[in-house]
Image (cartoon, rainbow, N blue to C red; front, side, top):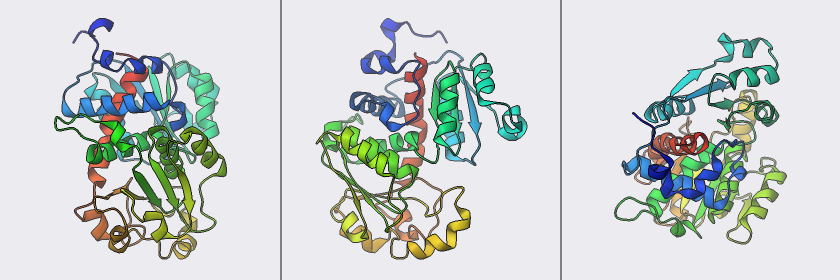
Length: 332
């Protein structure tokens, strides 16, 4: 299929996205409010079939040092649907896992692929890839942030609270809603705070003492909010969810923290997102979880399987949000 000209490009209906071409996405804060909204609108158009994009055979390299199901599959299928391909650069079968310097790897891969998605532990390693690479680098998860997940999360909220009859999104209807996250103040919580600040969504992080999000990211989110919304940290679960429109949780021990599981289970006693907490929220509230989930720990089986759950829509939306992101970074 021929690549459309700039004059007929489906991206022409989202002109703000032209500024993303060739850029990295290392943090949710790398986007402006207008760019964040445009990505969600494009993702919705792709999902409903109103927009079709062709990247003309471009390639995405995946470097995943952490295990992955949704991120790996959604990026792979996203590129395939965009007419491109994905190359899995698993560190266990490449020189990446044998000590080759990031500077060398990034520069060589930049001559083979059109973008890199990195899933690793340290944000500093991601930043080093971005420094040396000459193609866009995407944060597919680090210990600090998970921006692609947050895009899918807010797309899911928008579908529930801000959808027009034709399936398009009226994102101004998101402003003033409240997303309550209960659990560990981790990478997902960080990107939710930043994304909410950009979209005008109030975000409450509810967590036990000692498990709050990074003070630096909290301050960054509040600065980004510029009075459009509130970003709060609370240490009582009912207060965190009361009246909220989105209820979100994640595992108590993330990858790399497995040895802390028993300690964290004790610390998070009473923080399970269950029917009792849902009853404290807005009557229209939806339940979200980025998966994998531990039923009976951070979320009850009734919550994840109940009528308020949008967990599996949320998982699907990784695919659509990442199609929109890749199309913008790589150009149409």
